[in-house]
Image 1 (cartoon, helix red, strand yellow):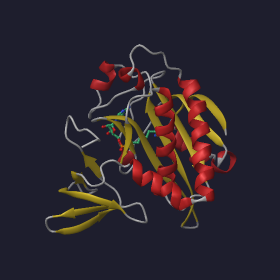
Image 2 (cartoon, helix red, strand yellow):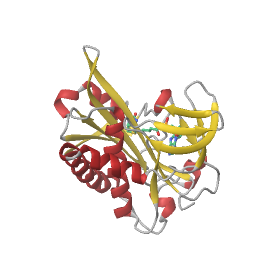
Image 3 (tube, helix red, strand yellow):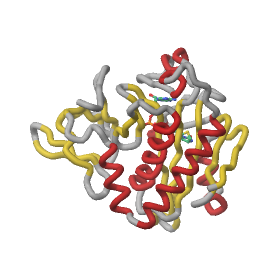
Length: 246
Ligand code: BT5
């Protein structure tokens, strides 16, 4: 997979959606700076220049946004585990990468529609590399970075981008060969399965229960006191001091 490095762009996701046919499946779009980096539901993605890895991969051969998110999430875990061995990053449904109780990376999957049908998905990935504790403290939820985890180390976003491109290509090829195996790996890395959590749905309602499974489509199944609920989007809240080991 080749990496296209842009100096400044509004959002690598916007760029990859706009140039979908040119970059799909084998070019990772990276930016040194984003002027309008976004999360889900129009939320802002904070990425001071030099502090983050901001990349997008356009995929024409995935069946859904959940599947693109699985490929991206698994690749980020591989990249992080290689860069900072000894930490225990994990996935938090749908698309966050966490270390202990802090967010290390976020993934935004956006569909490309053609004639009302899904023709592809762009997975945008933001990983906190050199984000300082002061910058992290300004984010509305607990955040961490590779530098915060391993302050004695120097990290190069360019080098990490190439490793991420390598792992993305690997998981994308594996998905093409055996989709179910990739989805099983994705479920296995979602450490909140089996735990009691609170989820805030798209309408803002908060519901607590046991996160019992990720279903065949990728949706979250929550067992609540008043029955089973299935969420296709939402924010899972974890308590301060949460440990993925339970
Ligand atoms: C996400 O949204 O986590 C998806 C983030 C995707 C960013 C990438 S960067 C490359 C590509 N181009 C783009 O324009 N976007 C993608 P969500 O789950 O909605 O989380 C957003 C929330 O995370 C914000 O409301 C903040 O609370 C928090 N946040 C913002 N910046 C953060 C950061 N650097 N680290 C940790 N949390 C952050």
